[in-house]
Image (cartoon, rainbow, N blue to C red; front, side):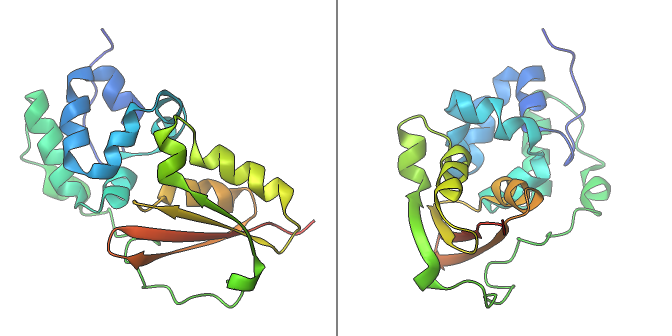
Length: 184
């Protein structure tokens, strides 16, 4: 058995599930988008980099609630959670619609559209599909990803690779992410 680790907002999802495999169903029950953790490829990729704080944002639930629920299920203390989450702000992608549509987001520049829920349903990884589609479009052109969850870890990865990315909630629980291929 893997060594038990503390459950905090900074705990990586994969590390949590390695240390507490019995918490998988507890975690999945917290938000519909967490059922994607059953996808073994996502489990090996996104779950390795996503913290509980990011997972809470993706799931649209308060990080404090998520940490308390997981700690209780693991039989750990919950007294100091409020202090631990005090530094966990909403982050740059938390509030849908909080960031105005940037001028580079232009529907006429969208060359590829991806339904992430369909990709996940067949065992695929949306990030791999987005990266492949970005290679197929010209610099300055856009790939649009539609999801039933906020894809914050994906956004972080794409921005780190030099692409521009913007997400908005197009309808309740439906998000559209525009990714512009980086120049040259």
